Image 1 (cartoon, each protein chain N blue to C red):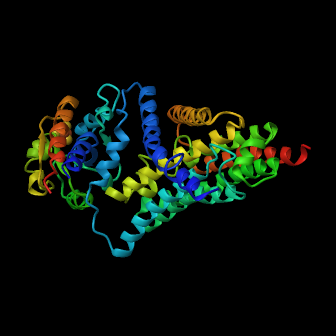
Image 2: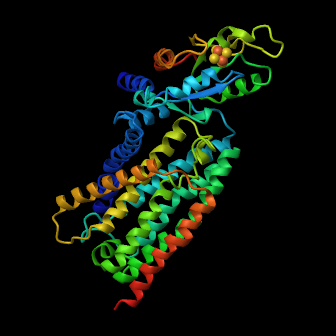
Image 3: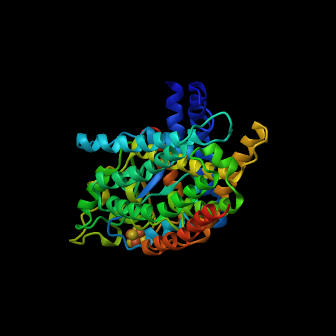
Amino acid sequence: MRLIDSLVRTSRRRSPWLFHLNAGSCNGCDIELVACLTPRYDVEQLGIRLEGSPRHADIIVVSGPVTRTTRAALETVYAQVPDPKVVVALGSCPASCNVFAGSPTVEGPLDRILPVDVYVPGCPPRPDAIIAGIAEAIALLAEGGHA
Amino acid sequence: MTVGRALFQLLVFPGLLYAVPVAWLMLWMERKLTARLQGRIGPPFYQPFFDFVKLLAKRPLPRPPLQALAMSALPVLAVAGTLGALALLPVFPHSGGFTGDLVLLVALLEIPPLCAVLAGFVSRSIYGELGATREAVLSIAYSLPFLAALVALAAAANSLSLSVISQQAMWQVRLPALLALALCLPVKLRVNPFSVANAEQEIYAGATTEFEGPRLALWELAHGLEWVALTGLWAVLAFPAANAAWPLRAVVFVAISLALVLVLAAVAAATARLKLAQAARVYWLWGSALGVLAMVVAVVWP
Ligand code: SF4
């Protein structure tokens, strides 16, 4: 039993798959996240994959201040990711609404809607910071996420 | 074929014990080579194994009972069908096989694509249905050259037994038939340039878009096993030396399979995805031309 547990923990650490959700971001953060996949940073060597379907994902990466139109999608997608899962707030927008704070079309910050596990501050954060944030999320995931 | 022999082929070589680790190895080789060709470092060799364990350990989402049953049964069926096909490969002739195992092999190899089509529809997602439709269209397109090549080989060897075919088919027939089979490999394995069925970034993951956790793990395993089975079939047909000792046969079988994976991965990394109509045309035109050529030679040559 102990052996299986540690095997599962290791495999969660070695194979985190991300689902990226744009909740009204200005696209700055999104570009920086995609930059992590390029030859310069190549997160695939850590086993990280950007998945197209939330059903395949372990880590949900949310960028943007959560606008009124994206809120329902955010909640649906969160329910579609199988447990264990971890939520990463990418950039200053989901953390504080950033420059969009006070707008009548914004329903954020993100922690009003979903339980956020890791914040990656920056507007936008550098790829290095994103990778560091995902590494933190991976450690949480290995312990079984927040579910 | 005795029962013990059949069990050995199913469970040890080239079945379960050999095929599962090699399936992971091949999945890794494909990803690693793609990464290297793109100037990246790529995943470590244990990656597919950890992906599999992680997916197995995820909790499945609640679904309506019938859909849950279908979505679990289809990938299991795909894995089982591919393992059965693997067990029929005559890596060591003279000692196994039976007349007609070619027909059984073709049927078993058709199970995973069929399951994928059903899976796409049963998951009731628009992306799954799109992927399933494309898969179905492509399987009609590639079945013509694939079956024509195998029928030509059978006609040339005058037998429906795989081990006899792999020994006795003439090279004039074998060459075009092998080319036609090689042309069918990328579409059966859903890699570029014929990856329109699972079209990553376009329709997400095609038929498997809605599958999660353990169900997805089984699909990944089935996909890896398909790599082993199809490259293995090609290797068996490409290396007929009847008198070679069994260790040599096994080594050459593995070597040809792995080399074929490298070639397929390199082609995949170097090409872009063809549209559905373009891909189908390649098979109807060039694939069929090769298949018909093999067939004509098999019939006309004395
Ligand atoms: S944090 Fe800055 S870069 Fe990122 S989405 Fe918000 S405004 Fe754009």
